[in-house]
Every structure is written in C-alpha cells, then in structure tokens.
Image (cartoon, rainbow, N blue to C red):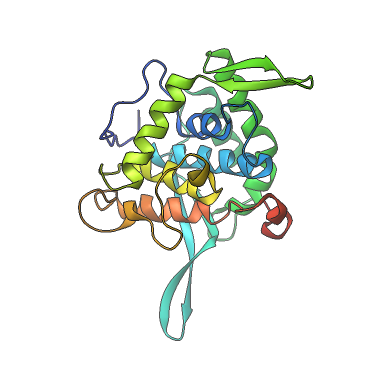
Length: 245
C-alpha cells in the first residue's frame, strides 16, 4: 500500500473483526441500550475519524493554519486544511469514496481542502454508513425498543475490548500508538470518555504527557493532525451551529 506507515498497536485488536477508526468510533457511540451518545456530535466525530484513518494511512496530510501572535508562531487548529498525498485504491470502499470526494473538493490558493467545510457536508453520511457496515458484520444488532422503533445494540465483547484498551491508555498503563491517540482524542472531544469511564482529566490528557504511557513515539505530524481534527468536533450537540460543522 503506497505511502502507508504501520504503527503496530501495543494491545491486541478485537479480532475478528478488524475495525477501522471510524468504525470503532461509531461502535463506541452506540451505548449498550442502543441509544447513540450525542447524535450530532457522533456524526461530526465519525466524519473526522474517516480523515483520521486516511491520515494514519498516509493518504492525506492535515495542516493546521499557522499565524503569528506577538512575534510568536502559533497553530490555529480549528482552521486546518488538508493535502492529498495518495489517491490510489485503499481496499476500503468508504475510504476510496472519501478520497474521490476530496479530489473534487474546492481547494485554497495553497492547494488545501478546508476540513471544516468538508466535515459540514460529510457528517450527514459518515455515521449512517459506518453504522450500516457494523450491522452487516454483526458488530451491531438491531433490536426493537420498549416504546417501538429499532435500536442498534453493540456486541458487548467487541465493544468491551475496545473500551478496556482505551481505559488502559487513558490511565497511562499502556503506551499509545497513533490509532489509539486519534481514538482517545475523539472520544474525549465528544464527552464519551465520561460515559465509557476512560480516565482523562478535564485539564490534562495523561496519554499526551511525556514518559511511560504517553504518545511521545507518535510522529509529530500525526499528533498535530489529531488535535486539528478534534478541534472541529463540537463538545455539545447544541454547539453544532456555532462550530459550523
């Protein structure tokens, strides 16, 4: 796979099946009751997770906007853009679809796609797509609700395995790889870490600190990419309009 750099996870993935970043995020967003944690936030987060997966596969490069404040250079993560690096087939139909969309998307004079604008359009489709894929693979199962209607209930074993590894990362018991960093950042951005009881402080993120159990080994461009993507995911459903996603 051209341009792909593998970062082996420090923990065994739920197997079978293998889950991509947006699939894991969609799975975690479905609570054991079948309800979805923050539907609007889940939609935006899942679209951001798609870009995260492509960044991990070195198909895109996320570039936060840089500015100078009082002579000091700073990065404006919520104004990030992206560059396409490799649009060859990935083996994942949804990823190939996203790359095709991005290749047709308007670009800035610097040749970058506005992530904010792309997320605004993609979020309506991403969560439904990955939820349907999880249902086809049996990781989500449809069940009738008490008051009628249908809910998607997650496979407890697969979901529990992902949650257990996130708790180990959040508590600093395990070093975090690039995939784990993106997923931890995403669930924290939408407030899922509290529901899942993943230990992440309100003011600190242990997995981003230095030393044992940190993301120090994750390449800097991927750490910046994760920060830029989650900066565009609203922390509350009521803030969707002000965030523009």
